[in-house]
Image (cartoon, rainbow, N blue to C red; front, side, top):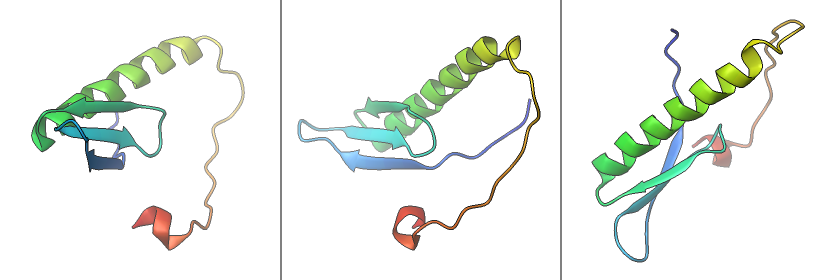
Length: 77
């Protein structure tokens, strides 16, 4: 296993609690408290990565590469 950081965005929900979205992955969750929302998004990200790994595990043919892009500071802040 490799530890990796993901950026999440927390916002207050109109009906109360928090909505939280991962900026790097198509994953979102919610919680009644900030702590619960962060716990739930962590579980959702782990679940997403587990499923993605199973789906790609036997199909992956090619090479892994990394790219660096310039992003507007408003997106990174």
